[in-house]
Length: 277
Image (cartoon, rainbow, N blue to C red; front, side, top):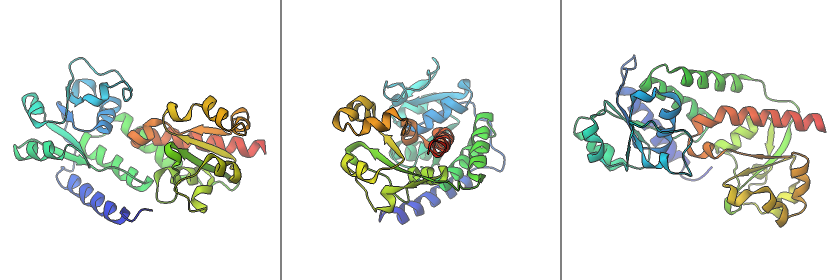
């Protein structure tokens, strides 16, 4: 865990407390919701009624981030207060970082702004889902996601474990204190990079560790399987035997939307690996 983690967790708790304190016990039904954050854009597109969305950031229309069609009536913004004021939103969702000036100005002008903290662990992710529900109400897709995550986390830890290593862009890997590491642990994998105390890992080190599963995390540009196999023919055996898994891009952009499917897929992957041994 980084040296900044305690401070980051403190700010996260303060933001979550602030979000909860300004909400009533029963969430209000909002009809003109705007977002100043890419993840919150995606949450609204996936969970809210399209008619209730007034504005999303321009990033959600960009090719590299677009996941769902944007309703025609929705205005795109570049996180400027003057863009949102004419839309008269009854709720503006802001992220923990970014667009702070716009959020503060809107709030000063009497606009209802709620900050949703980022989530860096499974525990924070569950609290974030609670914060979403407190703000947006009991939306069926949101409640389904909460139930599914709770059910997965309530499952007993796998007795027959497998090993794994995450390889991301610039040879970055993920150890203890990271959401990605927690997902591996919960799915029944021992994260070899964590046990070795590694923050970066080369393909040569991956091969030397001989994990049961090689997990890729990054863009197709960095992790096209054919590209990797060409760099290291040994990896072709991983590819041919199905001993690879690619974490979805959505997990880094907005883990609340991706964590359930990712955890279930990793659990299924471990079970298949154990059976094949």
